[in-house]
Picture (cartoon, one colour):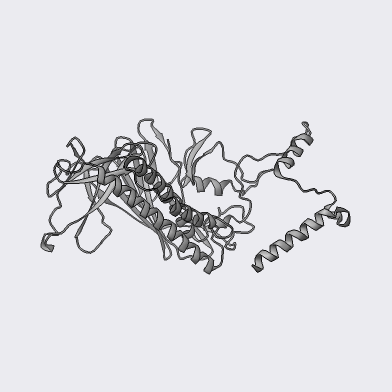
Length: 444
C-alpha cells in the first residue's frame, strides 16, 4: 500500500509539472501524447532530404557482462521456456486425440512466474542474492508444472496406443515439434541380475514397427554404482507432432552389435574420426578441432583450431560496465587429454579435456554414423578471478549470411558488423557478438 501511494504521488507530481510548462522552462517544448500520435508527428514532420536515422537490429549497448552473470538463472529461464512450450504442445495433442484435460490455469501461473523473472535485474543475474534465490524457486515451480503436464499428456496418449503383442517391451517415442525428427534417442533400463554377472556383455535388441532390427549402442548411465542400469541409444524416426512405437528385446544380441559406422585413425599428435559425411581431426596437444571437413562438398568448415579453450581478461564489474568487448586473450587451456570414450553401432564420442591452472573444460564430441553435423556437450569448472573462459570456433564464411539458434527463433546475420549504431569501434561488439553466435552455429 505504501508503495502504491508513493507511485501515485509521483505520477500526480509529473502530471502537474507537465500541465504548467511556463513555470518549468525545461518542459516548454514537451507535450504528452500516446505512441500513435508521437510516431505520426515524427512521420509528418520528417524532412525527406534528411531522414531520421534507423537501426534495424537488437541493441546491447550497456552492461554486456549480464550475458553470463549468474549462469544458473540463464539456464533455468531457457529450460523453463522450452519445457513449458513442449508441455503446452503435448497437452494440446492429448486434448485433441484422447480428450485429456488441458491445464490452462497451471500454465498461466507458470508463465507468469517465468515472465516476471524477465524483469531487470533478475534475468540479468545481477540482483541481490535473496532475489535470485527466490527467482530460482519460481523457476522450479514452472519446471514442475511443465514436467507434470508433459507426463500426464504422454501417459494419457500411451494408454490408448495398442502396445500388447509383439516381442519384448513396447517403447513409445514422442515428438512435440512441427517437423519430423530423425535423431538418437537414449533410454535406461533396470539391469536386475546377479552382481557376479556384471562383467558379462549385455545383450539387447531394438526393433521398429515392422520388426526390423535397428542399430543400438550401450552407453553411460545416470547411476554409477555397479551395472544395475543399462543405457541404450538408437536412431529413431518420429513423425511431426506425434509418436512412434519400438520394441525392446532384453537378453538377445543385436545383429548390429559389431557394426562400426565411423573409422578412427591416430598418430603421434592427432586423432581423426570420420563417417560418410564428415571428417573430424583433433589435436592431441591442445584438444582443439584442427579439421572439420564436409566430404560431399569438399569444404573445410573451420579456419584454424576449433573449440579451443581461451582465457579472456575481464577487469570489469559484474555488469561489465564500460566494456565493449571481451577479446583480450591472456591464456590458453592446455595439457590436453583426448580419447575415444564410446564407439559403437550408432555413434562415436571423443572426449577432450584441457586445463588452465585448477580450472578445466571437458568437451564430448559426438558423431552419429548417419549425420552431417557434430554434436558437443561441454562441462566447465572455472575457478579463476577477473577472467572469462571462451571456447572459440573460427569458421570459414562462404556466404553473406549465416544462421544460428537463439531464444525463440533462428537468427540470421547478413554480415559481421558492429553492434553500436552510428559508427565503428575498433574493439567494438563485433568480436564479442560474433563469437557468441558461433558457439551455437549450425551449418545447414
